[in-house]
Amino acid sequence: MESVRDRMTSSRILIIGAGWAGISAAHSLMLAGVPGEQIVMLERAPRAGGRAFSFTDKEQGLDLDNGQHVLLGCCDQFVQLLGDMNIANAYRFQPSLNIPVYCEGAWGQLFSKRLTGALHLLPGLLSYAHLGMLDRVRALRAAPGFLHPDVEALDAMSFGDWLRKNGQTERTIGRLWDLVGTAVLNGHVDQISAGLAAESFRMGVVAGWQQARLGLFTRPLGDLADDAVSHLQRRGVTVRFNTAVDSLLFEGNQVMGARLRDGQNWVADTVISAVPHDALWRMLPDVWQRHADFQGLQKLAWSPILNAFILYDRPVTQHDVFASTQLGGMFVFNRAALVGEDHLDGRWLSISISAADRYRALSHDEIGAMVQKAIAEALPEARDANVEHCKVVWQPRATFLASPGTAGKRLNPTSAAQGLLIAGDWTNTGWPASLEGAVRSGQAAVEAWLRGGRKQPDLPMTS
Ligand SMILES: Cc1cc2nc3c(=O)[nH]c(=O)nc-3n(C[C@H](O)[C@H](O)[C@H](O)COP(=O)(O)OP(=O)(O)OC[C@H]3O[C@@H](n4cnc5c(N)ncnc54)[C@H](O)[C@@H]3O)c2cc1C
Image (cartoon, rainbow, N blue to C red):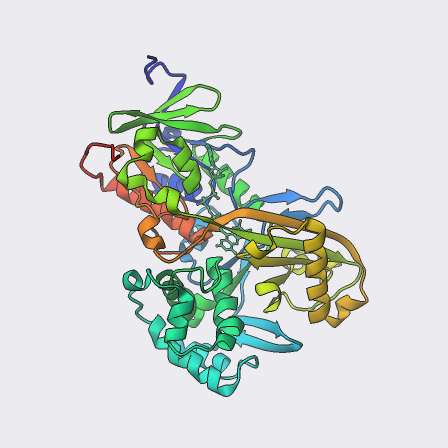
């Protein structure tokens, strides 16, 4: 049998995947003093950025993202990474959270004030027009549950059950918790873990007004990843695009490198997997697929996100962003205003619908028509406007579904596989699937490597 040492190439550290987890891992390695020349990234796609990618719409020549991404003020590691890499003008934060909300013919507002701790939410919740006073008070009463959630204990329960147990009515759930929760966790309240939901609300909403600020991207996402990769390359990192890894190479419990789809072997001292959970599963040899440490991989499911880009012949909105309870919850962005295409301000919208399973069977034309109808209902200016272009981007594998019991399915950076470190938004970061979670996972993998943290070798097989 061919030895993995009959190789074409080698490097000290091999990173598989040039999404934000892989980019973060490479950056963290260099912060730890590893010379860039010892790091190689292999990326299947022709461009970096993974699930946060951009493309140019052929018909209009507009730069589109696969999905309009947002940040919250709590996403400090992603922001720090962009800063470290001198990636400028990438986003802007609202001075404080301020999202107009459309619901059944009326407008309300979710906002925060610069008040200490969780108090920042008080004025906004007490005046939230889409709830009656009693429901607003009930919503406030639920807030202490987010201050110190017992994440592990709550993980078995759905967020919906937890909200009902805490006195929330279906109206409050639909008009408040589900609207926000679905955008953050990409799952509706009855689909997602109360533990991860409560922890996400704690970090991103309740902790303070700074953490709750909404960050809006002002450049195409793919450009940011391109800049990040250029930064790494200038410091000696080799990045190979259009290079798919077929499988990880093992000798006993030790990962020796990776076999590429073109049949070449790539030997490395350490391999950092920064690919999605199912991609890691496919790279594992059978015996390791059966190993207890990797069982979570098969149990994680995907949740889809739907985006529609609509170009109107005239301005239809002045908002940078608004939310709506229509179509199971959607967020509407004035993309032109955000990315500085001033001549299209108010005309070119990006509409994002998270946890969009219910629209899976519809064609792009049907989805486009459905979203246009919803926009026309919310925005009177859109009723008489003509749609010049409508593009639907369907991402069936947008994020892992944070279903109840998820915590036990997310892998840690280390396992019984020696020499393998595992990163990706789906790993055990304590964060929902997000750019921030991806960046933190890359850092966690490198921290584990620095600690020399390995599980003791054991027999890799379970039946
Ligand atoms: C439509 C949409 C909207 C979103 N909105 C938000 C948002 O508003 N805010 C937010 O924070 N997050 C959002 N997310 C989530 C965010 O994009 C992801 O959490 C993050 O990009 C994941 O990064 P990652 O590096 O862990 O994985 P990925 O981005 O998936 O990167 C993995 C990389 O590995 C590569 N790869 C896979 N298999 C192989 C192989 N065999 N060989 C070589 N390379 C391989 C892939 O091509 C990819 O580049 C959204 C995602 C989508 C899809």
